[in-house]
Length: 320
Ligand code: UDP
Image: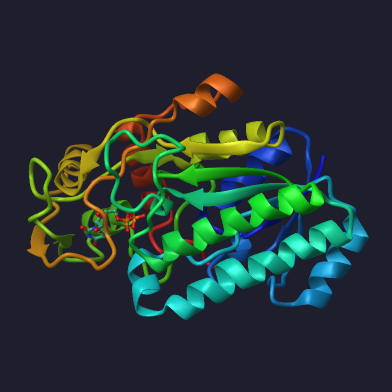
């Protein structure tokens, strides 16, 4: 298939592009490099340096390549920032996302695989979370992902859009070549690794009074390569799927596991809660396993080991 990957120069996008190319798909990456890195674009992908707000570039790209499908990853994704700057998230993730759908339909492309998030659920009533559990986001990031899912639902009824929404839990770990490099870094595992590399003095634990066994937030960490596999499968079937590991780990569990793997003390300081964070997010991913045969390969140790390896090889991240 010929596939457009928006945000294909980003952390998860770069690994998806690599897998698509290994699976003999033809790939065009559209990315404005506001978050992504040129060095993360696979050499066999065609690279269009542009963003979804550039409607002319978008339309021309569709006309030039006649895509069979779109994998839509381009978005802002920081929970804390979204609480501070909701407008930024609704503009980029919803309004520009809608421009993408309009450009697709105008040019006869009907299939989209969308990067959604566990953040659509908000504070779950029960865990593990199933796809049809209530969606009441606790932050504008999750709200923007839910709004886009709803736009796809109505576009599907009105215009025959075919969509698969993949609700990622916590993407983590690295491919051998393609890793995680955000500037500034806000995510738990890469920050812990920066401490192990001596680039930071300690990790701050955001909140120690959540209703969990050790008081810190519990998340479900899923390896970026396993996430990427799910996208290849999702090209074949429409639907909404959770992508997680069915296992929850607290912030303190992650720090402890990283201490074991890196052999570094990793000093930690308890700090205040981060606005917008639900206490527990753990997926029930049985639907995608059953319907698409998704078969994740990595556990928490393998996730942290893979990240530790990539960051040791690339202590400054990508050079461009
Ligand atoms: N977290 C933390 N210290 C940090 C970064 C994150 O305690 O320096 C916590 C955060 O509050 C959340 C979990 O680690 O409970 C995972 O956060 P991350 O930003 O990695 O992913 P998110 O859950 O926001 O997608």
